[in-house]
Image: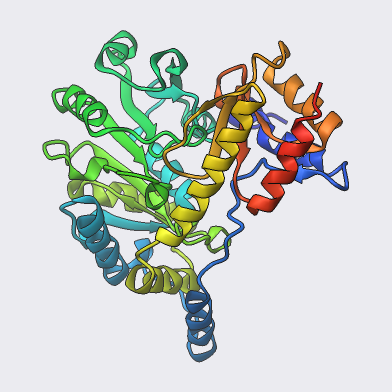
Length: 375
């Protein structure tokens, strides 16, 4: 029997390949998946459990309803300079479903979506499942910055959207205002959506600008965010889409016919997170400390590190240490040191590895001592 051709052509994630391989080594240090080790705030857990004990958990409203939508809008207006109401917001089953539903809403077969490489590995499959085409712009030679000149080379009549991760997974790079304005000005006069994945926005070490603060692109801007990274709520599966109000019914229908509605308990957790745990500076300081330590130590060993400005990753060029392709290097590193990292090719580029900073700094120190012995 034949299956959906888009599904048949999907490849297993190399992140999972390395994570699975690491399980073969009982003493391995797993730095592959971005799963926060810092726990969900206890107050959120306690209040949600109490709510669950005292309420029948019925279907939530499609899209989450106006109350939680209003809280998200208020949050984005206050923190990121947005101009939103609850009519711009849809609650999703994690940022992944938010992004997948958004792409299925805007894309037709043969449409093109521009991605900067390195990119989050989940992006191309989501686009392919829409029978659309990802178009890659390698920005490793442009100081990891996207420019108008680069966009002009890759935009065609088929370009439907530009998809950007900011702060970036895997590099930890955070876009500056001028770089963002250049992109905004580029799409302002074009029929192109800008899809901004801002899931790491609360984990910026320095200044962060959201695309929400720019005016004149309200009908083209789609923002995806959630609580997995900001509040260590990965298992709660709570994300959201901020979309143009006039198109909300399309985004809502796509999500509704995928998941029906979000989970009641997770919605309550999101509500408490926004009301009582908006400031995440404690997480920022911890991840920043880890990033600074790992950057300095890796550079001493000959790696060329992309200095992270947010999120919880290190993206490092290992070409001075080895001529192996990134998958082979990552597997060789695992075999010889029992440190599991992700190969750069998983993100569309060679000669790099990604290290997740989602373990205590004491474990990162152990990882460095092991990597020192690599040869």
